[in-house]
Image (cartoon, rainbow, N blue to C red; front, side):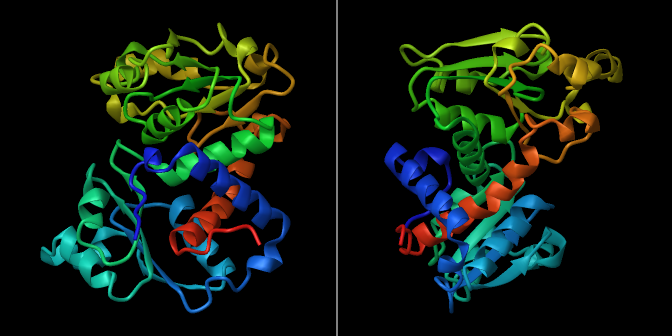
Length: 307
């Protein structure tokens, strides 16, 4: 039995095979309609989610399986004081595979030590979000045709954004990826990433303060929300927030084949007018999340081969 807690739990070959399977599912949906018949997925979401939880549930249903679980901590026995370990131990009696989101970093790892079913980390605090990373990798590969030899700009909250942290780590294993970090000083990437990823020989990144100064160089722009609650005072937030709004004037200098990604939810960091631009990939990205989770469920249940 295997768990997926961190995107680095998968080898590059396993990731490539998983993305190949997701591509095959996209092109041959009917072939996979019953592969998980009789199997059950439990979604244990101790904090709110829209895309991740529903895409997991849609993925299992489209594979012919069933879903059970809860969508917030207050609808579980944690309100009675039950530990995460006990909750998972019990639920693993009922489900063949578990997708778990928790606000505390490390909770899915703790759960994996007690579970009798495979655990998929669906997000733990500001730490990891491996299935979003797989979604991002599938989207980049489908849009660009490759995961190497690209320049990626990460914009917004790079300090607390778990999707950013996971994707940086995953891309670090592909060759010739150029990283440009676009953020205020207060929200730069954390030191552990600078040491763990960019401390390796040959790994570097560039730090800038505005989108305008680098947008013409980017193959991929990964937008995230600048979170008001992360600032020590409102004045700093007001001073910086409009700097990180992507609109059509900013896109005038961008490449015609730029791919704009966003893990969503969006607040105001991408103007709605951008949605109609063919370079906007974030809704295709959300759809890709369902297919990559279908492939992952199959792989973790021992069914992950292209038919």
